[in-house]
Amino acid sequence: MTDIDKTIYQRPVELLQQLIRFDTSNPPGNERECIQYIRQLLESVGIKSQILFKDPQRPNLVARLAQSKGSSGAPALMLYGHVDVVGANEKDWKYPPFDGQIADGFVWGRGALDMKGAVAMMICAFMKAKAENIDLPGDIMLCILSDEEELGEFGAKFMVENHPDLF
Image (cartoon, rainbow, N blue to C red; front, side, top):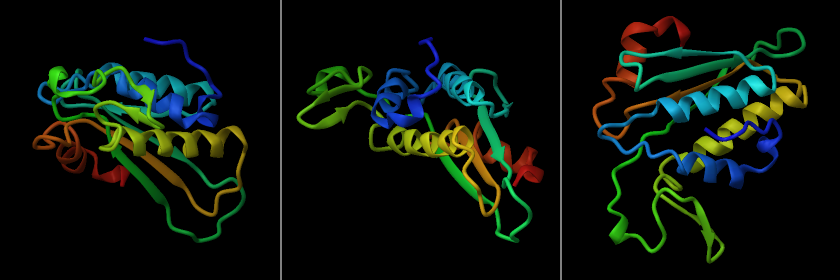
């Protein structure tokens, strides 16, 4: 586990590199360390989150920021992503798939495009909204799930079947 930097939301490329360094190849997934890291990032700026799971090694994270001033009637916005990735054979890669190297003007690694890059952007926006006390027109919900690359048994399917009230 790396040290938590509560200002990393200002540097999404570094956050992406950190997320890539968690080998969350599915199967087997093992998203727990990555999800715990995200939870610690959120906590560093005062955001509480819930961890929900069917299997403790395959958890899901849910957090919500409430609008800061009065009711505007705006619907909530859900930011959704997953942190598991398709497996990678290192010999097929120009750069090691779980190093998060920057080369040729790009961040290289498994998940950079699907979907740890988008997750890094969502986390940064979510943390910025809280850290900078941005006035939100409606609630924002952050859902970071496991097991998207396979059947969703531990991620989306588990969440919808067991925690529909969150949505």
